[in-house]
Image 1 (spheres, rainbow, N blue to C red):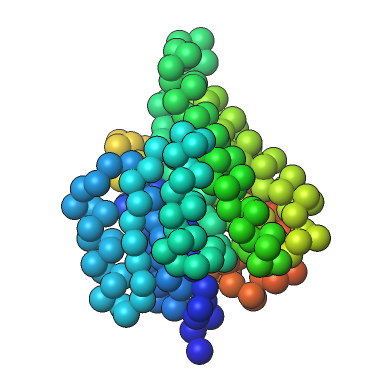
Image 2: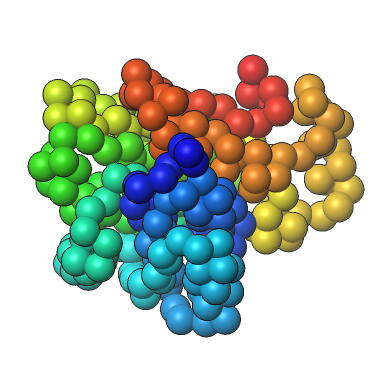
Length: 248
């Protein structure tokens, strides 16, 4: 039997990168997939078609994750379409890097809103559903920079650190209802976001990683699979670094 057979997963920002890899991995293990995206495009259709080809249910939902009321409506629709929600992956995120002294209010607000407020919105909407089920797994996609900080990324680091605090607090509040909440802190992962970094810089970073390579979205998806499944039934309030040892 596949380890997520019969479960329903809701994944935010799943049309590319880590979010897409998680959706595909969960589907491979039998989970029905609901995912969100900001705007309807070919990438969303590709995810739907690829997962449907595996023989599991899949549906994408257009969503501004930073809009509290709109998020509640999306979650309500997901519950109506799938009957329940067992897993929530708060993955939606953006970067708008810059030194603190030059960072605009818009750069700060947009990153905090998309990365952190969106996780609050979805968690707030999903928790009552999971509480009635007396079970659920919430996974926040943090970052090693949320654990240790990074120059030029005050907004991004703050948002990712906030996701850790959110998960730990939810774990304490909702543990008695059978709901678990954890974080994954990826390191240098090969995605569209990191491809914008100059190649020589990427190579330099890789040389400083104990495993001597950048990670892949699939590496992160495997950690998410563990946290989503019953294999981690006694794991909550934790941060798992998926970084090849760069933050050890």
